[in-house]
Structure formats: C-alpha cells, structure tokens
Length: 311
Ligand code: GLY
Image (cartoon, rainbow, N blue to C red; front, side):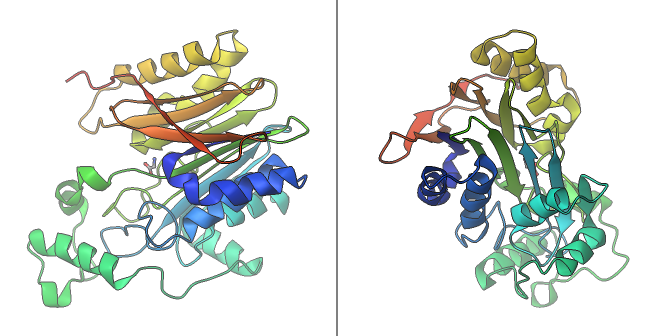
C-alpha cells in the first residue's frame, strides 16, 4: 500500500492511509484524502476558500482515474459544490456516457446526485484579497464588482498574480490489491477568466493512471500540462520501457519545447506499478509526501529540480 501526494495533501494523508489499511480501494483513499484538502479553509488553491476568478466566483476543477479500467470522471469550472473530487467520481460511477462535465452542466449534475452544496464558498479574507486585486487594477474598492459586459480580455492578463497561479492537490494511491488510482483537485489560477479550465480535470494532462505501468499527477501552470500532455506522457514513457525516473524527467523536459508568453512552473508526482515514486519540480525547494502501509506517518521528500524555463 502506498499513498503519494503533493505537500498540501498532508491533512488528508492519515485518514487516506487508515482507509487503505481498512481494506478500502485506492479510489476511496484518493477521495478521502482529497476531500479533506477541499474542505481546508487555509488551502487557497483547492476547494472551499480557493482563490476565485476575476468576477469573484470560485470555479473548481477535479478529476479521478481508475488504473484498473482507465475509467475516469471529471468536472470543470463548477461553482457551489466544495467536494469536486466526489462529483468527478460520480461522473464516472453513475455511468454517464461522458468523462468531463463543465460549468452549469456540472452544477446541474451535482444537484441531481445530491452532492453537498455550500452557499458561501469564500471567506471574507479571500473576498477582500480579490477586491484588493481589483482595486489595484483601478476598480472602485467600495463596489468591487465588474458590471455585466465589462471587457475582461485585457484585465485578466494584468490581474494574473504569479504567486497565486497554480498550487492544486494531487493524490496517487496503490491499494492492497495493487490497484492504482490518481486524483487531482483545484480552484485553478487566481483571478482567472471565467470558464478557464486547467490541466487538473483533463485526463492525460494533469492526471493519468494505468495499473499496468503507473500514474502521474501535475500541479503548476496547467496550460503547459495540457499542451504537452504531461501526465499521460509519463505513463506512456513507462509503457515504452523507461524507468520511472527516466519517464518523469523526459516528460518534464518535453515542457521546454513549449513557447509562448505563459510559461511558468510545473511540478509532477508519479509512481510505477512496483511502488517506486518520484516528485519533480521546475523550481527548487518544493516537496512532496508519501506513506507506505508500514510507515507510522507520512514523510516529506524534496522534489528533484528540472529547469524548464529557457528564457
Ligand atoms: N494546475 C492547476 C491549474 O493550472 O489550474
């Protein structure tokens, strides 16, 4: 048994491992762990109290993938429902003929299945931060709203705050049957354009799992993982016979081929079917965490650095 997560998954590690020890599936463990991060008001890149879009609305993305069957479920730009990972799982388990639901469709589905809805998704503190950001862009603080029809195209480009672009939570698990599951949940970029969807709900970009080879999840600037197909690349490189380290490093180096104005930092965690794990980042000082069934508590590991910024 093994759980590997991004460092902000620490709050969910113990319950997720307890679930695995009780015989739960890898998918149950991923959901248990992720939900605790989604409910954590101090985590501003995931679930409740994440940073909102430019209109002050919190839009959540999440996906989950079953390595046994390659079944997956995902939601994107979903408002009002904090446990995006659970709604994503239900997209898969209710046997919809779809993998990914977005926006109002995702919200309608969440209501239909009775997903837990929270009326207020932001604390006053986060709402103040959003107002402050609008104020610095010339909006009246007393009424920091953007009237219907306000052009957002240029505003969003300057509103982007590099410090708040992409954290996100990742969980990878292997259960006692050797089955693998991967899950990702995020509120995405702070102050993003409404409807912006990152890599987290895109199977192959921010999330991929296949029992036969391994699994990978990403955090960071999602646009890059979408363009490079990063999570699937790692698993495909494993399928092609690379070691886990070779596969993960090659997928990170692939990001160097991307051009354009929006090139930022990327991070990934990955494991192979034997339970080897690795964490990489394009910047120094980033950690990930893991726990095996034999360990009393999770342990942090510094991620290896793979520079990808060429300019
Ligand atoms: N990696 C999370 C996002 O870009 O939304």
